[in-house]
Image 1: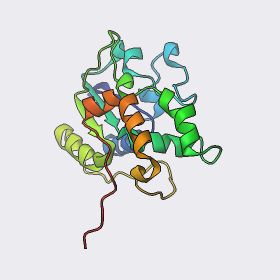
Image 2 (image 1 turned 180 degrees about the horizontal axis):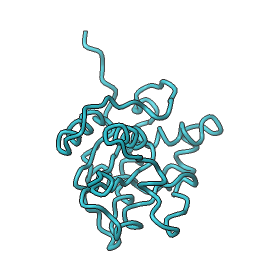
Image 3 (image 1 turned 30 degrees about the vertical axis):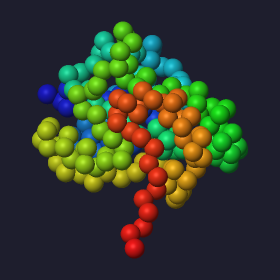
Image 4 (image 1 turned 135 degrees about the vertical axis):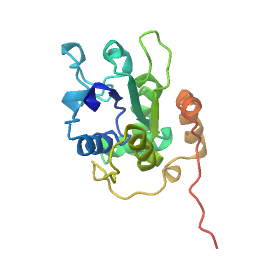
Length: 196
């Protein structure tokens, strides 16, 4: 049986999904591309909440899911910063984007919501912050070869996400994305201080 018949991948934007799909393609010899795993019939040919690309949430393809559902999530503060750098920088400042667009985006839990409105946990939930380790565990479980993940998008080097938020803005994002924080066990972390 082809692995593509066992796995359904719910792709949340800016979480490393393209890197994971590329690794699955290499590991299985199967084509794991956006048009293969994410577009299931004309009803899913629609733009996502960010206005571009195809990232349908679980509720739009629940009837066609395979036995193993996987997804990747990311710390909400870092996720918003990545979305900003991808879509808006340098048109507006991060603060302008955050209050104009960022806080109106759906949280990551919404991508994983079933048609009944609940947020089921996928069989395999990987975290962006530990994506290689998550792939390695998935590969071992499915008897796939070890592959080193490579980034799909070239992002410019930037400081730790915490340096972009005032304490007030960090708290506002925490409230707006509290479901993500709760379901995926995230909190706002200050940049690690160097050890002297």
